[in-house]
Image (tube, rainbow, N blue to C red; front, side, top):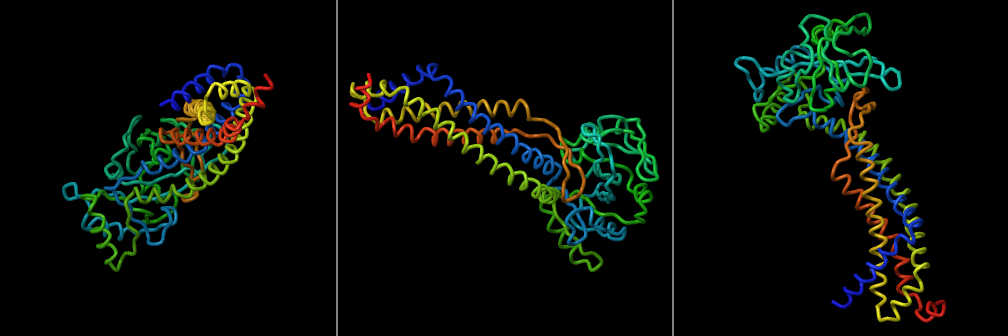
Length: 395
């Protein structure tokens, strides 16, 4: 109990004297804040991209592509195979009709608002059942396109990020002109980065005949995937890959997420090393200035452990303040900040928001506390070992 009282007393004294060391303390706080800010900002890109991709997927919706396809862009499915999927067991029925959408996926050039440069934007041909197999999509502006016409509905994120996609406007892709008749939301998922039209019109415009690239189906239940996959794989007319939408989009998100983290973690480590030296400088300065004070406390009977712990507490507290400051700035500046980037798996733009999540902020605080612990350790040992007689002669 006496040891704890000594620690509390010395710690309280150290904290009351912080204004006398305001310069070095501010340097330590700002250094740690910068580390946490960069850590949260960079990794919020990965969080946002991953959330945007995965939120488009559902466990009760399956996507079927040609075997070996890495994405819809390099898949190919015939009309006969679409009919096979529609009749397969495990597919949800709405009366006599299967809840299904056979789709075509092409990439078109649309100009970005921010940089005024062309970007690859997904242009998807869908069937009537597309809204039924995607339970997170809703029309929020204008109307749905009419089948057989060059009409488009656009995702809200695409409309915000790219030029010429306002409802009522006309845009040219290749030799065809298209009218934007509506906009839809999809809970911030990757679907909002796309343009949608009637699949038969898109087939004709891009000379794709009667072919598709993927088929989405609503499953009777999450357990129906194995039944559907087994039925299709045993059919000699079809060699498909069958997976849930969530599995598909998780695989699509992985390369970009891994790339961002590969950059983010080393950058954070490098900056953290610099912040540790900043904390070391601050705490060594604190110990140097307080040498006489520490010696007096030791002469009055305070043990070396109370001095060591109080110095560590001071360093950790400064780091915590820096971590909280960096996290707060990252959240205010970056959370919800909308950007677009090229998804290497589909060679098209994905519009997403930075996501400074609670777990990311907590991880940032962990980083800050580690910096504070390392930055305060050696100065704390020096303070605890400070020769009392030598320090008192300097009084």
